[in-house]
Length: 308
Image (tube, rainbow, N blue to C red; front, side, top):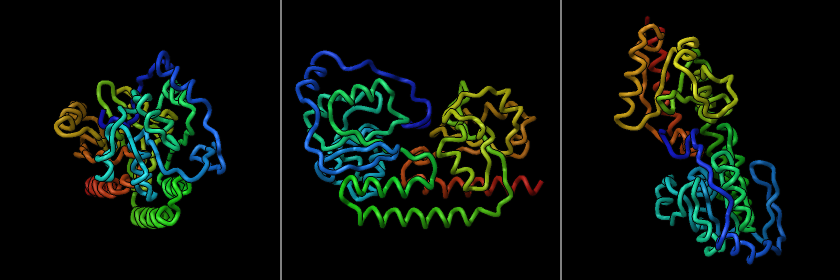
């Protein structure tokens, strides 16, 4: 898989038992709420005051909290939270599939911020046994980023910084859309794993990135964010460009598989592209940095197509 916070996470853990369950029971329901905040899924979260001690259980949520001006209030996070660089100094509690919940209790956070699409239901149920407020941070499209940052700013009491960041995101996204709005559309397969081939469905944020770049995801009709597809279905849809997100030397292996199918348009025109910037799957503000680079690669592929 190209990134641990990617589309193919399938591991799930059992409900809490034993000592952890007993500790959670003894803590009792969290009380004393005086303010209500609404998360990205529309659910209400009650806190006594804006959160000062935040546990973030997803790299994307951690990046978004930093963008909202609340980075110094994140007291723990999970593996692979490396954007921005300052996030790398925050203590880890495991990964999104195996969080050390006893350590979470010891830290006594005001709120737990998680990414619902990357946190299995069993894991969410285990977290709920802690009786701590849970805030769900989730974006599906680039246009969702500014609003999500603003809501996190309200949660953390950092509204001025969050508002500045949200406006900057809106302006940058508007410039990116305007730059590629009139480009000739090209069809793209974005491959996120091989053997079997995994791609992105139309509801995944990376599909939105393709549209901003003036490209069309050939599997945009699929509702699964990270579907497995057959080679035969790729041949049938015959994308003009194939982009792999494999890191390092894996990219050459993935692309060599497609070169064995010279009938594909992407192979005939030399439009087999390796894209190694893992920020594309971050689901945070840095996705716009990756989008800039991806759009340039797609533009170059578009020129190759039109020159033939």
